[in-house]
Image 1 (tube, rainbow, N blue to C red):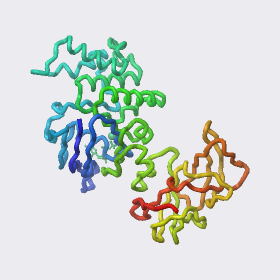
Image 2 (cartoon, protein in one colour):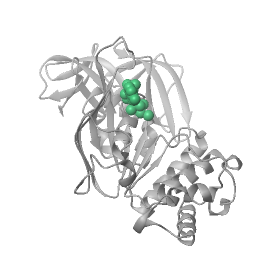
Image 3 (cartoon, rainbow, N blue to C red):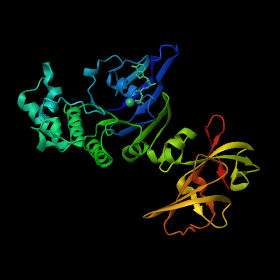
Length: 367
Ligand code: ADP
Ligand code: MG
């Protein structure tokens, strides 16, 4: 099911009663979420992700704007009639009920034409349990399950009503690192198998990047960029998005463009057309540095870490904003660890420049 948000806005009175201004948790969202895809809604803590999900599932009413599921205007439709499945960070299972009873719980309240017999309920519960691979555990209580298994029960419970849309609010946050990796792949598989339009909320860019068909990057209630994960990584519209995506993160420098050249301090590191002389923020991705004895960019070497296929060269530069540059170099290229400096040339498409004030991207043509 396609989901369309039209000027969707949610304001709250400020929690700090002394402050009169409102918090705009969701600020004028205009977006069309395609049918059958896995969408990662990504942003730092407090940026409005949960509020956006609550508006989608109907737990909260928007201050203004409209929401459509397919062609249906669901803005005023109560949560229980929206056909939305919801999974939360804290699995919120009923501790005194078995796995099977937890999964069938949402079906017990169906009335009228939707009412199911006991047999039908059991069948549906078993199908959902099989999908998340917990069908062997149906008679256990939540306390007899691992965190990962509990989260699977919560997912099965959200799927059992065959929702039109599945919403997940930081579903992996309570799991340890290994389970987090495994469960995110599971979520990807389940989404593909069911084809249910799924919106997955996380503050973890790597998590969103690894499983999403499309990501929505937001900050302080505002959508900053929407696109395929790789496209957003390669082509960020502003400095915030560039910094938020990628591990190790992009290195940011104070730079200037002068006479068609990009300078970091005294080093003229790139030639660029179409940009007038000005000061800029310069973002360079870790994979954008090429070791080169004759390279124009001269950095102070502070360390080298070899990690299997790649080496991480750690260095600093006088114009660097932040503590260190982590550049990723193929482990085959040898770095003289005793040297005081290291020189790089840059891959132009891994270098992005941004306006110093607005932090918006400035597009250049490399020469
Ligand atoms: P996230 O899920 O991205 O961490 P939230 O959607 O929970 O962010 O919150 C977004 C902003 O809205 C925050 O500033 C938060 O304090 C505020 N907020 C959320 N819910 C309420 C509420 N019920 N009353 C007042 N402020 C709220
Ligand atoms: Mg939240």
